[in-house]
Image 1 (cartoon, rainbow, N blue to C red):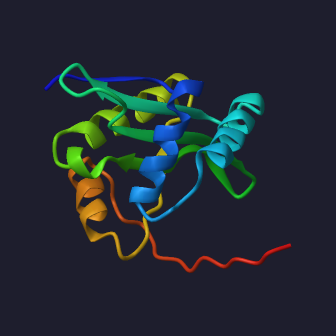
Image 2: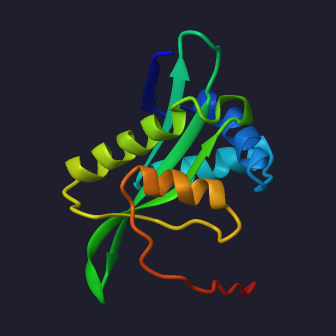
Length: 145
């Protein structure tokens, strides 16, 4: 199966929302459209989608973002990577990750960072297979404002 990765388009938004829900982050298409438009308008990285000629539609998506922080050198970060349940283990995730790394490299970043929920052990093994090293654990805090 030949996997193609391209920049996401407005027509992909409903599938982006559907796939987000498969990973446990439910969002309706209208809200995803608002988020996608804001990412585009504010130049907040790139959203990429994977497709194949064998299967109609988008099989996965990733969002890679620049991170510019005072305390460390600039890096790119994977803000999300989601592969359709039916396409997991087929190379779609690896193709999306490679495309995100390519975007980061072209944008001048020498380091790529990935954060992954502690319960996603399969994802951790995937990133390690792709050459990523676990560097720390952390707690995430949330407050509505």
